[in-house]
Image 1 (cartoon, rainbow, N blue to C red):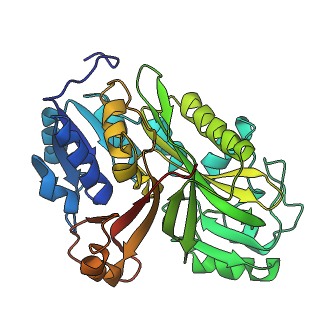
Image 2: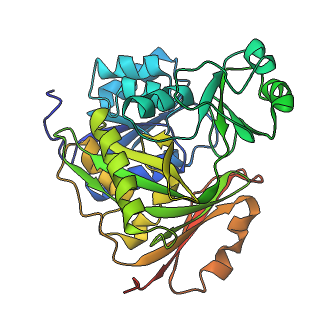
Length: 370
């Protein structure tokens, strides 16, 4: 199949990963007339509840690979921590969107920073801490490929497998750097200067195979314990200049990497008005959940459109919104939340509740300020 051909409704979309993002993508696909085959290792996998063809098997299972690639006309993913060799193998059989190179970069915080450097996109001062020697012998003049070295206080982050606050330690001074490195398992890390933060924002861009792009408006994010707590639009803490800079950064990265699907770009806004790129995600993003109820086209439908090389939908909001994650037992408040006629409740159907786990979200709509 030619990569540029539209994959029409009635086809089957393969999704790697079976959490809430995969579930909401599958629901959006079904509305457009697509079936889904969802492949994920066994576990608490809510997306399997809505899959036409659920495959519960390890990603190394050759029979699962054969079934997935036989059923799917195109493949995508719901999170970036999918083995790159698997993505490369799938791409030899059916279109895989996004591709392996995008995934390779976005699985590694150090590679993301190299990308920002090459594109001349500002980011917080960063150095690589690859082993115990680096951690024990760090100096402010630590030799690095980046023009700006990290200074203290700083945040030490594992290069891989970091999300929702996992794999991070605050490092107030160089004296505790080695201790923090050991606490993170002595794996390769990046050390990033802790910025003088005004607010956190994100932009989601959709890009199809033909290179058409659409972007959602900049949203403002609030984190608690390093987990996204609330996202709101309009982003009242930023001005038009910051909004334009943030959108330009996201469009530049999406185009440079030939992303097909969605790209979410998380950014810091400093108190002196700088916009600093932070992290990337090649998929639907938690900060975009408000688009389900408040935009003409949700991020999940947009992802399906982009992956299938359909015309992209209108991302314009028709309402202002505040989206709040429901973590752990907070999902038990569903009855109270439903009493608000402007609240849109989304429960993911996860069976195991534990502190900090995303069990659902609620989006409260309001009129767009004039």
